[in-house]
Amino acid sequence: MRALVFAAGLGERMRPLTDHTPKPLLEAGGKPLIAWHLEKLAAMGVTEVVVNTSWLAQRFPEVLGDGARWGLRLHYSYEGPVPLETGGGMLHALPLLGDAPFLAVNGDIWTDCDFAALPREPRGDAHLVLVDNPVHHPEGDFGLDPAGGVTAAGAPRLTYSGIGVYRAGVLKDWRDTVEGEPGTPPRFRLAPLLRRAMARGAVTGEHHAGQWTDVGTPERLLALDRQLRAPSA
Image 1 (cartoon, rainbow, N blue to C red):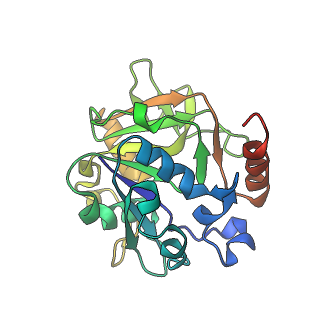
Image 2: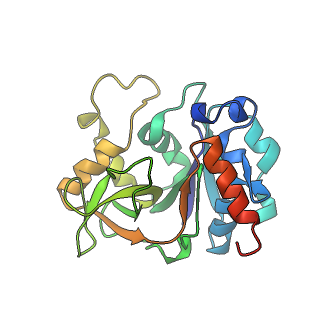
Image 3: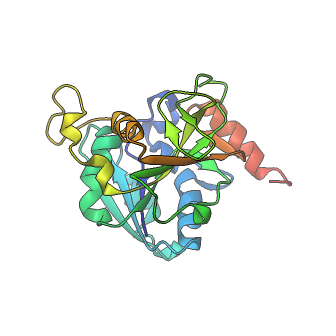
């Protein structure tokens, strides 16, 4: 299995911290946020990881190198000066990901979710990890039914963690779903394609009740750093 780490965001809410450092390279607990993911991916046997980049793209190879220190081979998918959003970024990275299902994770989250426990072969187009709704996102994103199906509506509503296992087929006929002119290279969000797949019952999921942080503000980064440095962390 290969993996994709979304790391191309501009990190605007994290300024001035992200003026010179991309958000996934900001440190918590003594290491870059993205390094926590790379360690877990290597531990589960992943060897090829694609990191999509845009803002301060040159900083990633400077800090991470070729991935050898984790036993990984890193591939950098540069999207240009304007990030291509989640859907466009995934589409842009597909040539590096191959045809098999792959794990995708946002580079600006921290979690104790066990990546190795996720299905290597999702039943449909995607398998998503959902978490309890954080204070800053109380309405949630999707519903999760008792059989493990993820729905665009319904209760209980949970928040997408930014962790999922995908098949390339989730992007099939993406132009039929994306509104407006996506540009060249295409820039679009993944969520509408996921909702399309949900409508045909092609998205499963699970509820992760453990630790998860969307590191979207300097305050959340500081709180996470303190948590990870605490003796009991």
